Length: 239
Image (tube, rainbow, N blue to C red; front, side, top):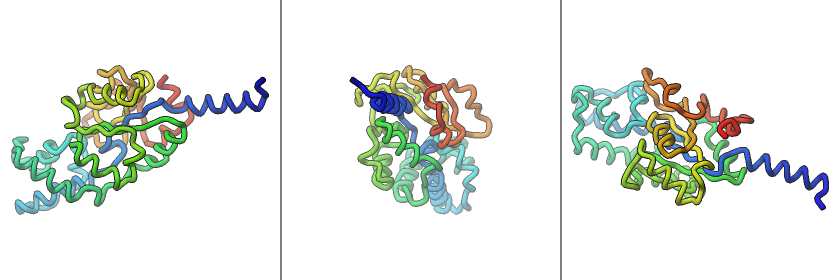
């Protein structure tokens, strides 16, 4: 027969397990990692090679989540968006050298990931960054054994905003879509989650442009900061 103490323990365990979804999937750049300084170093090396002065971080930041083509186009507006494959290859080669030199976790990320793990839940990363670059970041952050799954933009046949990476992650880890949530700072993240039938959280601290309206993206919740996702009731409101 269960004692009162046993019942209290069971209730506490039930509350603990229910705190987070069984699988929390994250975008990387602009959501977990502030990689904009590495990106800035990359484009400024490219600009210096062409005799141009440095670009301010504030001008590049809104383009970081959109990838190497968008950042190159922003760094060289005189091209009118006509970024060649050679320039993309140049960007990626330089970025690989700058990878992790100046990037930092957003405030609260370490505590959030620890709380997810302590709850018995798992977390993973689905990014549009090329997989070989995303994998190089994992040991720098000591995440290689903690991240349950890592999918890059070229891991599968489709990338965000297509739902395939999110669906694949849930299936590969044996989780139902209803037990998963995706967190991202770009509309393509929220679009991918919706298409997958997965709940989503809009990360408002990311790399949005000033003209974007995240309230219109249709996310299931919005978080102004990472620590907001550790507040009592945040995840329960998504159920």
